[in-house]
Length: 398
Image 1 (tube, helix red, strand yellow):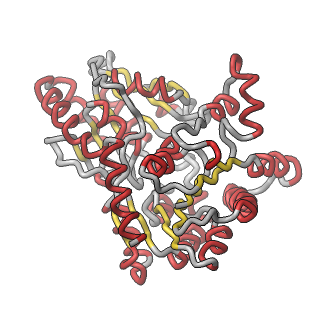
Image 2 (spheres, rainbow, N blue to C red; image 1 turned 90 degrees about the horizontal axis):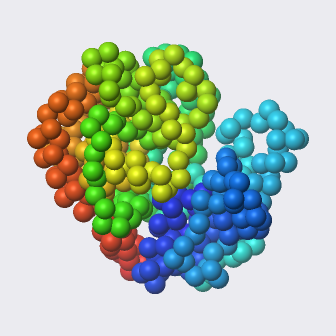
Image 3 (cartoon, rainbow, N blue to C red; image 1 turned 180 degrees about the vertical axis):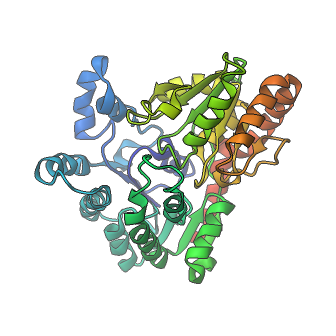
């Protein structure tokens, strides 16, 4: 099997698991700590920050080096475009990067793979090439394909949060998904929430859907959550989609009553931090994987009041740490509310504030949820994930 991916999605867990199962032919990816630019960046490691630090975090481990093909062409293309086409839209830039890497992938070839595994709406030109060569195409549908539509509908509720872009990209995003769905032999969905979106948008391809939940790509080395009471953790980069305004409003309601509560936000950048409605939030910036481990292990509760996901990796990572979770069904996790987590409706700050207060005040309830969370987390361990993925892919190849 040949795996294509941009960035360090799941910390390269999928190709690593396939390598462990003896199923990986090659990994094709963009810049990493092992590409030419990545190796050069190591010289700056002692003083690295920002983009250089993030590049050095893209470490590809557990895969034979001769199977890793990591190209800097998309990065160099970005640098050239910033000089020659500074007004390029985010969508145009995204499509350009994938055309550039697809050309490189075609030069690398197919390595006698029978199956090509790629993410939704990525590397279409290469997948078309592989399909024409008779290969089976597996598309990992990593988010509900109706997400642009969902976010476009929220634009009037969150003025100034940048949701206007969804109006201009919704139609093209859904068209791109339909194109990928038509090409795919299998549409691998990490959750029922994603499968529902696939079937609604492309009912003609419902028979291609397979559900295979992701797991945690963090290894806590046997450590478990030891909470700091009142420490509320949120993590994610797409602020509105993941429900940050809902958390900000809930924090505003709780802080006057419980000033000791610490609403910690990992992963967001300038532009959000300065918003007045976020004044009660404690922004940590983008953290290393090691720092994120410590945050999960010390959080009293993890919150993600999301509007749409595939299967939220940050929720899985919190479960794996044994940290109770407050989220929505759209996070994609099979949570039984008030048993192994708490589910609220998207966009409901009253419910979020109420459940945070309940867990903060009712410590026995928090302890019960934490115990059950650890049991639920066993369904999302790396071993459980690898077994699910291998079983599904072996069925495809049969």
